[in-house]
Length: 275
Length: 275
Image 1 (tube, each protein chain N blue to C red):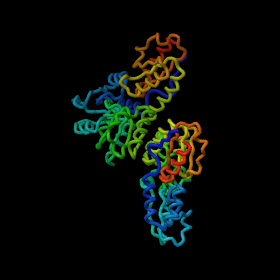
Image 2: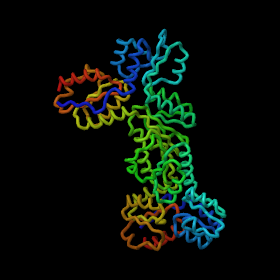
Image 3: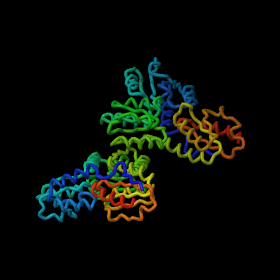
């Protein structure tokens, strides 16, 4: 069985940057997981004493707080600033961007459509910067019965599929006189998605490595599944099953933007055993 | 043979308004045809002494000038203001809008994509309000090899098809970080297009009445042709041929936004003779 890695996969700029920061800062707490990958979070905790708290209220005598790659809400940031703690910002710059856009658009009087999952921490953070009205949607149909203003701004969660974002914009163009479109889908997401698209088409089994709480990893999995029925989403090599590769000719591998290389390598070694 | 008129057709708000103005003002000159319909232009000339000049240089001792529904360029307007002539503005408000948007976007530093025919007087007028850089295109492919700025504004000629406008916006979303979309396609155009879409699907012959220099009429003709092979574009009843209706069961009729009712009625009477 031939094994091929996607042309673009794994760690993105924002994740690399955050991990480097965490390793340098050490002995710190993050509010929510720094990145959506349990393997790496455990490594940072064991090797660098960077622990993950559920929320700000769990902070006790910590001296250093790191803001996760997905960002936090404006309110949480304000609360954090009131505490006697040093703050390090590891928010991915691609996430800071829609936050700033939401703030600016609100100042200019625009209401904002956010294409994203309302329960995702990135979206919660971005939404908190809208001081007018925010519409968080995953599908344009959610806006069907809503009376929209005559001008509106649109941003996207950084890890969403651009095709769906286009559908939302197309829908808005018919309803609203001015649509201010900010394509905030990050390049890494876009490249990883394009690469898995290509690879899945020519593979008969696909393995996607990444956190099951990672939006961009799940997105990669869905794209793979679309072209290759036998696609699997795993967090680590222990989940791999020998039967997946029986009679298969080509195995494609990709990984989410928060999946470290050392996890991908362990997966790769395991699959080679079954090739 | 059954005859059915489209649910929405003919004179739009801007055209009605301009004709009413011309009839009231009388003894005036327009720079370029007031509307794109020769029959009506002739009527206004014969009954109200409103004559059509090719350009501003043709003005001699006229005391009143009427600005055509499609608008004129900023330069022509400036030149006109320097002359000893009373100016009446019959520019359709739906056309004034993209002009104003182009001016405002230029002031805010945006370059502007104009979806439209660069030779159409409306587009020439709208373009003249861009003081940064304007890209006048009919297809997104025209932008393929162009290095675009990171933010751009988009407007449309009022009579274009919204589906193509969407394709252009979708293309820009992938190339540019901020796309400021102004859907300036006018409601009348949109409604006439929707109605002919519906009617052409259930007709086996279609007759579209309107000026052959009228962009919105040509657009209606193209939509009809798409669903009904035997579609005909005529300016008046004299062009109708008996053979078009032989063995046909349903004739659909529509008319451009600049086609007066009296012309449509003459056409209708003629077709009834052949039904």
